[in-house]
Amino acid sequence: MTRIVMAVLGVLLALYVVFGLLLPALFGLLKFVLVLAVVAFAVVAVVTVVSRFSK
Image 1 (spheres, one colour):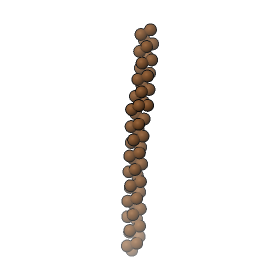
Image 2 (cartoon, helix red, strand yellow):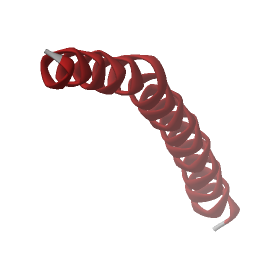
Image 3 (cartoon, helix red, strand yellow):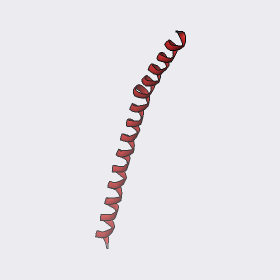
Image 4 (cartoon, helix red, strand yellow):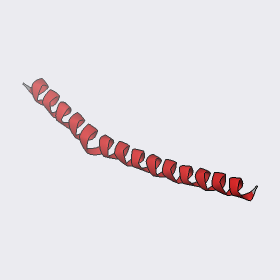
């Protein structure tokens, strides 16, 4: 009986860790990378436009 209870508690704890801690952290990291990519694209676009108009 104790083994079953501990297994159920372990599964519940694992689900809490995955859905409560890991997924929000991953989505936060993906949002940060997406914002960084958009900023990098904007910088490259501005440098390209300025270099084409300066010639």
